Length: 354
Image (cartoon, rainbow, N blue to C red; front, side, top):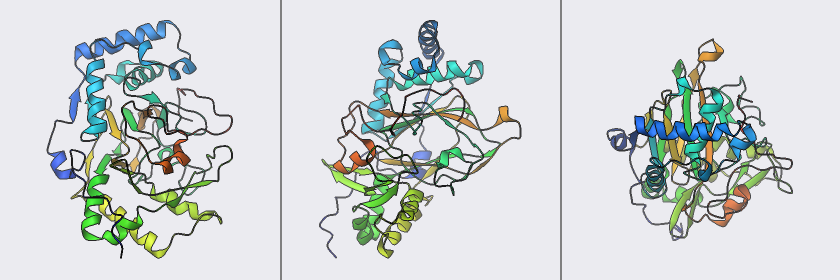
């Protein structure tokens, strides 16, 4: 067994264990009254010029000035990209905002962290995470559109942000795990499987196919590039790519490696859970962490059902990505990469789930 291709053990603040992180509070911040005044003043100025959803989707940081909060958001971005890889901000009083106001505030915060990217074939730069009554058994459905357990995964961007508008009646908790810690565990206990996860496998595009591309793309779970270990993962989509005859077959060794990765991700010695309450904002660095959501049950009343807003962001100062990511991200230019673009995509901000 040739293990010479294995990267070294990963160290640094993003190589954490869940229980130890859950016992800390340095990753939790609060929006103080002066911060909210900063945000709401910017929101009022922006919306005074019009509340067209397309305009909200094209917002820049210059159009949403935050004299007090901008330096704090710059520090938060550095912590995401070069520190522990995630953060939680609390106490955005979402109950007092209309949907267009909440969308504008969330977008305004987001553009100080990075450039919003399209999250689906419809060009939504603001996503609605809620149960649409769909099933992931349909290969055209993305799991965030269901109430199912999502399983640990990454998104196609540098930073993913969530704003909780309403929580579920039961379940729907957020889980995080360090991909660097997963790699270290595999490297120590099953280096043969760690090697396999450095080789490309077919990943399903779930019907969102760029011009001239195949309905799947090839990418490794782990990539070692420019001195950094980067993760890309969605188990269901590695599995469902097998529906395409032209996709390379998963071998028994591939399946064993993916199973071992899943088992470690779900190990409570490594991951931890948090519950997002209304007004909580969570930001996660996709290249070093995986995130998940437990299954949930909703209230019968539509106005009481779980509902989160989501941003995918291309962040300035982010790491260089390996060439394999071009199949999913398109351009690999730092600050201008990621998202999903297919023929006919027009960027927009939907103000209701779709």
